[in-house]
Length: 300
Image (cartoon, rainbow, N blue to C red; front, side, top):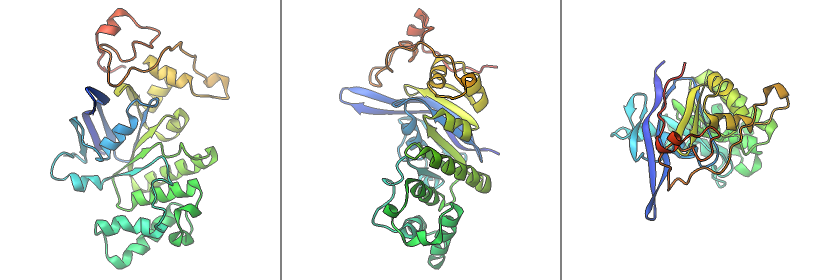
């Protein structure tokens, strides 16, 4: 299968007074059909900005985003937007409290003139069943559902236009742990059934292990390490990746990573360091690290 979503040296800068905030500073990847790429990193690393760029909610400052081989900066941008739908972190905040669930699901079909008007309600009811909600949910409002049920509605809405890619920005972090598992398993079942690809934004390594085939670790707007899930999570090369894994709690002592003596805070996105972005915190730092920005290179 070919890549349904590609980012080529994507950059997003924002003006911040006299300075420039470098939220994303050169990210490249290719997401294959039917697979999941997880983007991980601590708060402020640029994960959510990258998600908005890939969902075509914002335009990159430099670089390009391609969906199914087409450049999203071209005249087909509006059509390509429909091929990458988003699921947000807060399921209640992303749903209109004044609309019934049925109206929420029908709206994308109406706005984009998909299918006959008489059949749109039936399509919405079929989607509710597909995400595990009972038929009576059609006429209810968001406040009448639990957080997990609302996220199921949000997933159903994202799938109404049959997208090739779903960008999920921390989709289970606001849910109870037991409900998280249900929603994640639902997403995997839908992926197997529909062949959709996920760009999965998360800070939870245990969730990433469950969902992803490939992992991209971001730090200060840049990729620190990327590769297959097993390679990155079982044999991390970058000290920042090791720090993230060491911060993940495990009951089994054999699965705990040895902690690294990481100091300090991430650099300011408006005042990037001249060399490696991790140099001020890295336990292995040398003089060369502060002068040269290391480029990504293939390992093994």
